[in-house]
Structure formats: structure tokens, C-alpha cells
Length: 182
Image 1 (cartoon, helix red, strand yellow):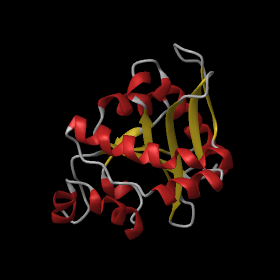
Image 2 (image 1 turned 30 degrees about the vertical axis):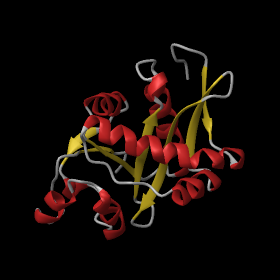
Image 3 (image 1 turned 180 degrees about the vertical axis):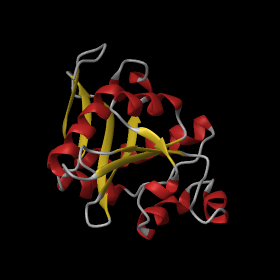
Image 4 (image 1 turned 60 degrees about the horizontal axis):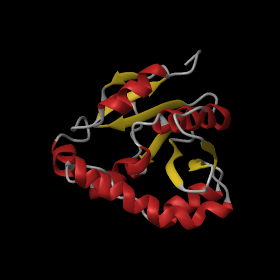
């Protein structure tokens, strides 16, 4: 995928597991800077996704980490979430998020061709990227009902809102891509 700078977005491999800690740290720092909620990720979970072949990572030609995202399946792979999209601050505004989002979407379709793909976000730029890929805004009732997915939201500052509304809505917007025939 092309970006404004020479950045390579590719499937993450075992040699990328050392980036799990900086990825998680940037996710948390970014959420704090924006004043938005985000579920905290565990570096071990990020490593696991990398080793399972369910993550994409971006680097400059010089090998500087630029961004990351991963996928996770729910309800016997009938749903897949595109999660953890993060771009290092030095590379924001350079189409890196767009390239990562495209690659993680392609990976989701390859690994889970029949699954409904969803994303929840508070960010307008991610909503726009999702829309370009064919996602549509939906109610929370149309995405996974797996309690383990919602368990991941417990570390978000907005979790009391989510729980108080019986997991039917929160400050994030749910977006869904439905493959043809579903």
C-alpha cells in the first residue's frame, strides 16, 4: 500500500514481537492525549496475534516502527474485529492508517471470508476509513455478543457507560462490513 513516505505495511512475523510493548504504550498514550477511551491491550496479546499471523505492522524503509493493527475472531469466526489500529505520532497524517486499515481488512477477508467484520471507534478518521472499505454504522446489537469481547472494554474509561446501558451502546461507534451473501 502506498503512503506519503516510503513505508512498508506487511503481515507481522515472529521477528516483530519485540514491538509489542511500544505498540501497547503508544495505544495508551494516544488515547490519553485524545482524551478518549480505549481498551488497554496486554503486550502478550499483541505478541500472540503477531505469532498467529493475525496482525499487520508498518515500518519505514529504515526499519522505524510506524503502525500496527490486528484481528480477532468471535462467535466461532462468524464475526471478526479489526482492532488496535495505531500509528506512531511521527507518521500521522501520512496515509499510514489508511494503508494499515486496507491491509488488515484484506487479511480479515482472506482468513475469514464469510465473517462479518466489525470495528468500534470514537475517531472520525477511522470511521471514514471504514466507510471507504464498505463498513456501515450499526447498533451494538448487530456486532458480536461474545462476553469476552466486551470484557476487553473493562479497562476503558467509558466502561461504566457501556455496562450501564447493558452493552447496547457507548461512546464508540460500531461499524460493520457484511460479505456478500450474509
